Every structure is written in structure tokens, then in C-alpha cells.
Image 1 (cartoon, one colour):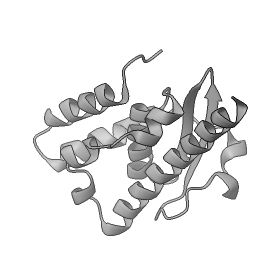
Image 2 (cartoon, rainbow, N blue to C red; image 1 turned 120 degrees about the vertical axis):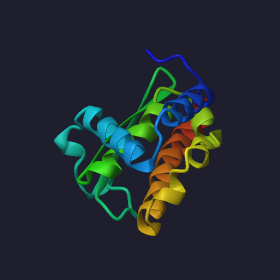
Image 3 (spheres, one colour; image 1 turned 90 degrees about the vertical axis):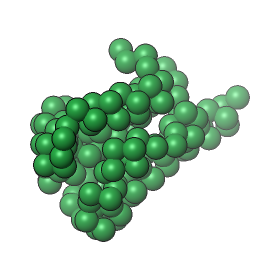
Length: 146
């Protein structure tokens, strides 16, 4: 169980990426993260779970358990799979409100967006928005239940 806050996880990502001297090594790290991403159930690999706006195909599912959101995802591209894994490591297992309000500053701090092609950078934004929309939906559901 990961009990770190989103900010603590973001700080850890920045620290991890600071260990690499150049972007080839950072890309290798991202690829390794993608390889460690747990396999998503095949039932989620359809259009209903596909993130729109990504150059590659990305499937994302979120579940609310005990007031926390847990994400699972997959992609048909190894770099994209690593990027979604990075986002999951930072956001998964947190309260919907915390996810909605996460600033995601680690992306700029590690220089990720500037080292992606414009299409991949758009895909990164689409993945974040998709994850935050899930959280927003769950936070609204919680408000409506009370």
C-alpha cells in the first residue's frame, strides 16, 4: 500500500530522473516503467476505455475502492506505456479530490513534455485529463451520495 501523497510521489519521480545524465537514459527508464506496468484485463482494451487524443492506442480504467482511485492501463507503444505507468505511479491510490487538484509539476521538472514530439505531448495531456476526469466523476458521485 503506497501511503505517499501525490506531491511526495512527484518529488520521488524528479529525484529518480535526476540520476540520469541524458534523455536517452531517461527514455530507457520510462521504457522500464512500462515493462513493469501490470497487465490490464483484455475486457478494457476497447474503444470505451481508449484515451482519445493519443498518437498511440492507450486504454485506461479506474476503480474506486475505499474512497481511493486505482488506475490500470496499457498501450500499444512502449514509450507511451511507460508514460502512463509514470502517471499511474503518481496518481493511483489517492482520493479523487487530490487527483483532480494535482498540479503534475513533475512533468515540467523532469523536462518530459519538452522531450516529446508535439503529438506525444498532446497525448500526455490527454492521458492526464482522462485520469482527472475519472477522479472528477468519482468525486461528484461522492458528493451526490452525501
